[in-house]
Length: 83
Image (tube, rainbow, N blue to C red):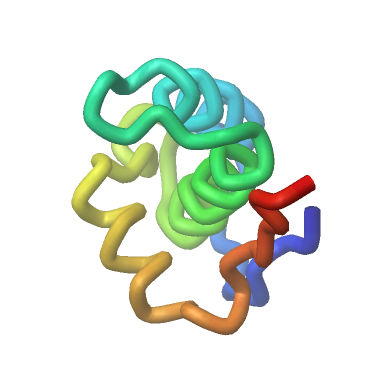
């Protein structure tokens, strides 16, 4: 999954943010994404996290990740649902 081009300030919580966002995207009852969409959601969350200093303080909430993804429409995955 390609990463988003962002300015990196601190990578402290990038991995934890990715894993947490991936699990949340797969499990959230209102938005149960497929694996490709969950990976893209997690990649966006980690991209936001590395743009801020600190660990816990850098982890974005769902609204921030969704807003980021809406601002980056060309990077959302194209999935063939007819396979």
